[in-house]
Amino acid sequence: RGAVIVMHDVTELRRLEQMRTEFVANVSHELRTPLTSIKGFVETLLDGAADVPSLRERFLKIIQAETLRLQRLIEDLLTLAHFEGRENRGELGSGKISYLQQAYKKIQPVILSFAQVKGIEVEIDLPDDLPPLSIGEDLLSQLLLNLLENAVKYTTEGRVWLKAQAYEGAVRLEFGDTGCGIPEEMLPRIFERFYRVDKARSREQGGTGLGLSIVKHMVEGVGGTINVTSELGVGTVFICDLPRAK
Ligand code: ADP
Image (tube, rainbow, N blue to C red; front, side, top):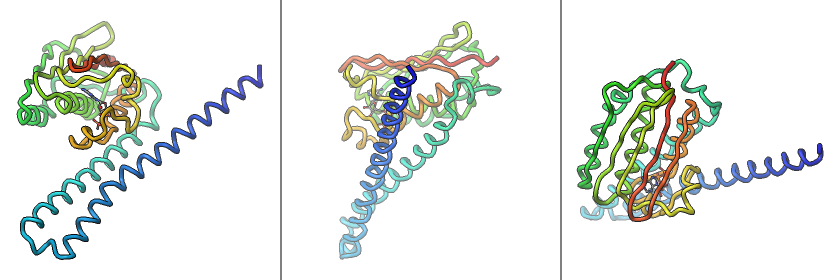
């Protein structure tokens, strides 16, 4: 029996080691891609393209976009690293308190302007008498931002919504959209770091592939749960239960 347990541990260690190696390879690749592009366009500008106004403008815009991408990536990596060390369920939420309406107000302008550009309706239904939650307000805002931004990002027409309902001990948040949906076989993987269903689409929309893994770490860190259901071409719904403040 002892030997079986040791074998099992070795397999688990190998799996963790492989995940770590993959993560480092992914990070390097994700950082190198925009850097290579920035380097190339800077060299082209120095080689004479800077003297042609139309090229100069275009290339500088590309450099700006790639720089922003690098910045976002580094911010997301730091956020992830911050949460990964504190995975114990409930630990992040203990002693914290925040209100959903207030956390939403902070990110509302970003979501509404993004949705407006894409011509998508946003429906927010947060009852006035929701109990406070056992999570810091900045964390809650970031959670709402990541999930609502995704909903808008992966929807081309229709609407996105956020509903909340109080249960005994918890508040259930429902984030829905009438977007592209996620193939069933990929659903279990979308919370993994750097996993994207459509890499080109995510990249084009400024995604880093880290948003959902940050969300999952945060939710579990405060003792909550998050699940997803989706239908291709119909839409996606994330259900997130967050514990009430004691
Ligand atoms: P990204 O930065 O690529 O959006 P995330 O970690 O936030 O990374 O999401 C991982 C992947 O899950 C996305 O690339 C996308 O394929 C899929 N996804 C997330 N949210 C949605 C949604 N609301 N509708 C459809 N696909 C989604």
